[in-house]
Structures are given as structure tokens and as C-alpha cells.
Image (cartoon, rainbow, N blue to C red):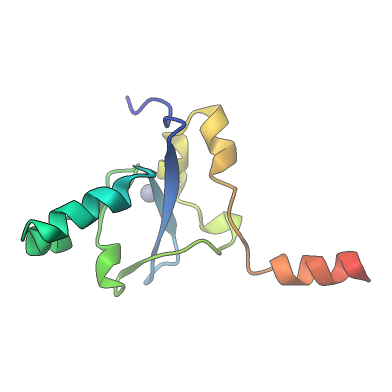
Length: 112
Ligand SMILES: [Zn+2]
């Protein structure tokens, strides 16, 4: 059981380039600080090859920006359903807190 995402964590969206499917995982907002410590400790290689495991159990490597890339702008239909099912109802709303390719068009229509 995955449980609810803690309030001090956020969602990271990871797109599989070949399929366009967007998976996600929760991460703590202080992850960046931890990364800096690891890099300073000479463990950079170990960190760079460690996979980012998504909510549905898929191993991704967004740090290589090749097969998987971090994204924050995609269509709702691209969301991985397996990942989505692991979320609690409250967290499922957060899964839709992302930009879409249509955002700019919506703003233009609203202004018209
Ligand atoms: Zn997934």
C-alpha cells in the first residue's frame, strides 16, 4: 500500500518519450538538498545511475533525458492509469495540477 503523499512532498511527472505516457512519483521537496550532499561525498556515479521508480513500479532514468524526461506540460490523457490508481482521491486532484499544451490557447480565448 502506497498511502497518501505527505504534505511536504510533491509530484514529479516523468514522460516516457517513446510512448508519450506520463508517469509520476512523489518526492520530498528537500530532495535537492540531499542530492547536493551526495554529490559532495563522491557518490555522484551511484546517484546518476539509480532509477527513479514511478508509482506503478516502472524504473525510469529522467536524469539521462533520453528515454524519459521530467515534464510539467502534457495532456491529461497522457497520464499513466496504473500510476493514477495508486493515488488517494485527494492526491488524484494533485495529479492534474500540471500545465497542458492548450494553456496558452485557453488564455487567448478568455481574453477575447
Ligand atoms: Zn505509471
